[in-house]
Length: 330
Image 1 (cartoon, rainbow, N blue to C red):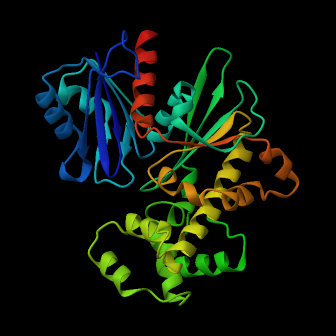
Image 2: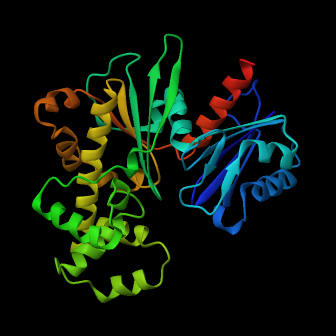
């Protein structure tokens, strides 16, 4: 049996998988609020106690760079180590990989119902595939065909320098530099970044902030759902929130295009993470305009398919896929 997990800053999702049933059909699956626990081992112990199941091996996708079987989770106060987990949980082996690398491993397993098409493009069979995920942070990864199967490759591209594409984005960059010093794409197009855009527009007095919106934002620890809902409100949309989401989409489109060019993603670009499925009405011409704004390479990226992954379990699916494939080869 394989214990697989998607370890995120907000939620940790664990499942038990068998080679016979494969990665799409776990024997059981449970989600936990990550920050309620001191470490991953505590969550796994509670999971195994709840389910009454056992596993002898594990594979975890973790939001953070994995080096030498060890990672410091990017947005959690956890250090996760393969050997330490093996000993603590009495497992024969543990594999850690970046959560976006895990997600990338799941892409070939996705079905039409798992996807929303933004740009049909002209996909090339077995072409490189890029994955970009605005959630709590901004994750990036890609997969390449090795002649037999797709292989995942980790990236921390979400932490590269944010490059503005118009005068308003230049103002945003200067504003964020005063706050953070170095400004990455994650500071702009992620769950951490959308509130930064909103605050910038509010301080710039782009539009007045309605009292009802101010009250909602004051009562929440996570402003992203409030901003998104206010932007999507068809009766009384907030001008501030609509503008913030439009900037978010443009920056996301530009960075998705950057990643697509760097890995020559002729097999497609896949948007995952918690935010894209919630803002589908905004992922229209604005996203593709920024995605294709690449000078002499504009025609090339226009041929690349772009999809939103609707399956929220994709990172767990990928961790299970990687784990089962790895152990099958041992």
